[in-house]
Image: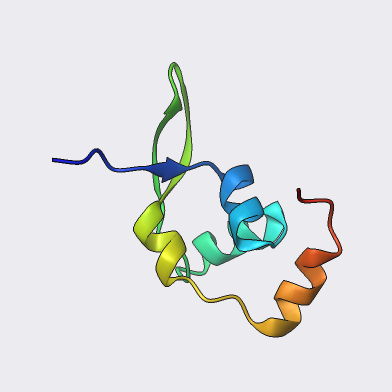
Length: 72
């Protein structure tokens, strides 16, 4: 069985091409599924599954704002 892959807030923001604040907002507004758990042991934080990233849709307006940020 394949292990679940999780993204941190920063990596999810890069993948979605939006700001970290936008990812936090989406989690708080229950628009992006995330859970609290180990991200880089011993550290804990918000973890976003690969499936949640795949299903999350960013509006074209917000995506255009995110593209202005420095994500490589």
